[in-house]
Image (tube, rainbow, N blue to C red):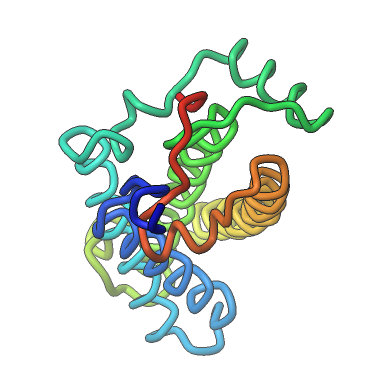
Length: 194
């Protein structure tokens, strides 16, 4: 049997491009912080644009890209995590319940990070699309927004560590190379997958 007969296409080109572009954009924004404001701002705008496209694709995209394919009730997520901890989790062709929850958490965290960043840019630099709304804001709102921005940026890093750990554990449990599948879009096909 050839390798093509043992794999199926799961991740469409948009999902894969989005994933790696988001990784790069967030990493650039995170490491540049206030030291390179132009680069930081551009990377932040890129994150927001990517998230907007991903939300749209989550509604109209291919099967495994749609939110309806990977948003599970909390009870299912909790059960999946318990099964994962004892290395007996079911294999899913698309995102598993924990992965789906992680996507939602990351989208929310990155949206808060991006939007507060745009607001801070408007307050401190009188620049960006929200500058006219925040041009008269005092340091009180700026301090709150800056603190929120930093908390959610760091929370996103925490989520990334959990996500990468989950990918490694899932790859081990099911003998899948999930990093490779996010590059070529293919996963090993089996009959016991969801």
